[in-house]
Image (cartoon, rainbow, N blue to C red):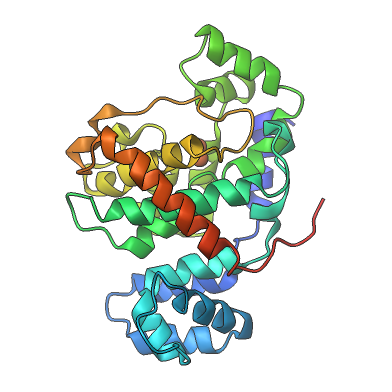
Length: 289
Ligand SMILES: [Fe+2]
Ligand SMILES: [Fe+2]
């Protein structure tokens, strides 16, 4: 079996990070859905109920009195943020295992993804086209999901790939991945998104997060948001190992997001602060090897 065939097999076997998130996305995708359906689904899941209440009671969301009902919590967070919370809260190995192929320790993928999610949510406020902050959060969370499959096929190659990037032999880490195995973590992430029937806009954010200009025009604002959030997360010191900062920034992001480079350090500080606050509200990663 070729590496590409094995990767395709692994994609097929990969469970969705959160079944409830999947159900929620299906409900939200139906234009005629009601908030009541979202609330009901959350109420039927005891651990998600706890997580949603925890997040709604963080300083970021809560105004005044403690929030004790799911109804209020969901209204406050917005439905896409509830999806993000359900993915975050899942103790799936998708986020919490080490990415050996990237020389990344257990927890690093989680840190990088959560910081990117927070950064994307913050950046969505600057988007020139309206983006739901919850959608941006979820996209930020999932953008590198392909690494959870590809990592296994890169074991022992990180030094070589890093060197190829440094010498300019390849344009970036994505190209280095393609040179080695014929595909890259963005394409694999896209295959996972399709398999899990994620909405097109999320699939686009995953596939094009390193090359946002390639995204369909109608998805580009979110894709640029995720592109920038990924860099903010890496600049803040949270990468996933050997590929940290081995990608280029698309300077045209300002066509979609009204934030200057000078404003990014402050955003980075805010993301860092928010990350430390929000991190402790989520279930600790499951102990997996
Ligand atoms: Fe990536
Ligand atoms: Fe990333």
